[in-house]
Image 1 (cartoon, rainbow, N blue to C red):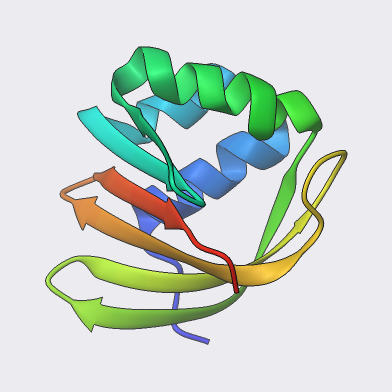
Image 2: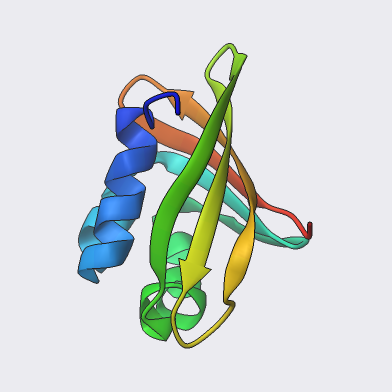
Length: 108
């Protein structure tokens, strides 16, 4: 498997550690998250989503595969477990420097 890029791994590690501050810090200031069409922008909205749909649900992520689409875009198949969504599916990330600028969760 291709190595998980550091900004994506930081988001995974923050989720798995239950560290909301580190989760938000993994994104750029204007970071964007789309969860099956629900959109969240910036630190306050990312923190809100995290508290209701991610760490707030005790989510745990495990990377299954990484596909580098070039220009900082990656599709990572993650296995998700916890008290919310459980299953395996793709998430699309845009990496800018050492941060995530975009995370898109789509139905599979």
